[in-house]
Image 1: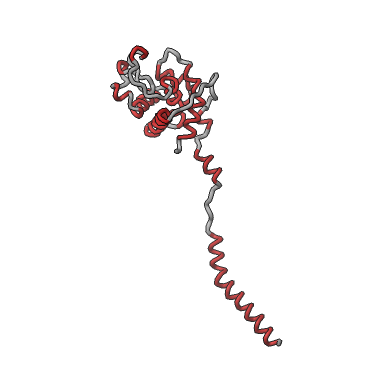
Image 2 (image 1 turned 180 degrees about the vertical axis):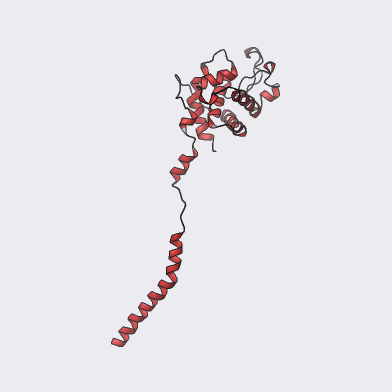
Length: 196
């Protein structure tokens, strides 16, 4: 019985040793490889633009907000895409969308007849007679946004200006303070759609 017990113990020890030799290096290599995973909440958070970049001065005054239909949201997304195409940061998209919210409620307006402000057209109510482009160009969301952004880039220090000052310098509106009321909604739109 001692012999049988001894053989069993040695057999089990041998299996354990053999298993350790073969499994040991594999397990050691498996543990050596770093695992690169991020919690979902962190990945989603990282995709949102930094709010201090979107609204560096905080909002000015009472804020307005409208519900957007599919066309208005598509126009907002077109403004974001054009901003990226121009190589400008999220703040430029916030200024552009707030300007368009004030000028047209993000609607690509054609000629409004008697209700038209001179010959103003499109998302930014740009005027062909003021050199913004042809009516066809101005009513193209990408073109009109790039035209607005070209004007914005010519404003020294636009990145550090309050939104309404930057927008007014480009637009030369009769209501220069009106742009500020759309800053929060514009920032929310950019935060939600910049990386989508």
